[in-house]
Image 1: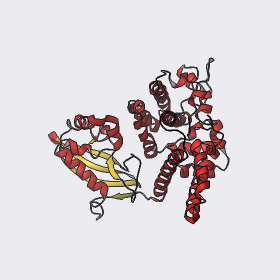
Image 2: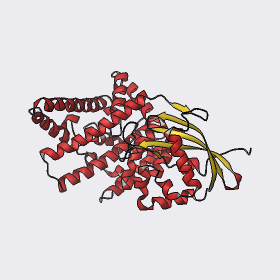
Image 3: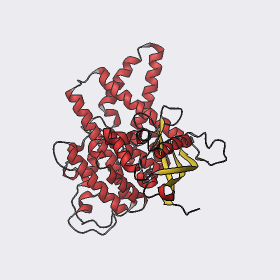
Image 4: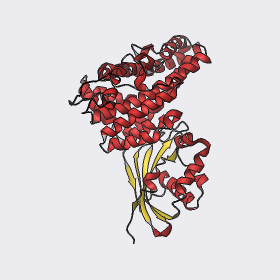
Length: 413
């Protein structure tokens, strides 16, 4: 079930057959077929070029990667695999981007239970504690795979052929299954020379000692996201076999959905590329009119009034998916100990087309005043970033350690 090219994906092949028929339906059909064909070619060319250059370094193309960004990496590297690897590491080593890439993991119940560990690994990554990032993510991947299927075996106990992903770019012949061969490769003798591969067994068993570097840590995040894609592909394959026979329309519909997701991601990437970070402070006429100011004022007012139900409605969809019906109880437990008497919004900084940070001063009971940063993301109903004018709402990324217990105290005035 490995694919020599992205063009060999079942949904790709089926849609290609549909396009041949669509071309027979007059000028409108030919134009639409030509447009879809271009998108298909861009997807396949980018995926195949990525693996051709970086497959032997065991990087995996997964669904959270931006086609535009990866094409930029490949074009800039101009065939130099080492240069492409450094550019890819820079792509991951962006706090907001990595955070947004990881958020969809919450949709998988077995990953959602481990997301606090993923978040700790992310913090360690940006603090330079790469050894910690690597060990935590290795444990998360093992535990996730062990829980994901009824066959209770962790990732390290799986054979490469068990990680072939149906109808997914991680199922490329240079993808996840290919990279897994080094993941489980045994190391008996102690090795002190630097390594730049994710040698799980050697690292965990203590025979590989010099792995504390950004390359291995970044590959751990890359592998985590690829494993999540493998899990999604496994679920899709099981539904496909159990419920829906292979038909001319069903596979085409799946691929059209994938193309639509790629198109939306491309629009987000274009908006980010064109976006110039902006900051607004009191005295600027746009300050109080900015949606982030208004959203923050709304949230802090709810907090001050102890209206935890309305406050909960301003949180990201992923938080609601994580806690389900108990989300309001979770928010109440988090906020209630920090009674808010008053607040002042000091600055709005929109660093991305669909993300921004608001600086506020919070006055708690007892006269304590703290400086806090509230991180917002404009997202759609599928919890994906959605800059204007695309449909979406600004929602708070729930990071209580940032703006509750660990906010920066201010000196008394």
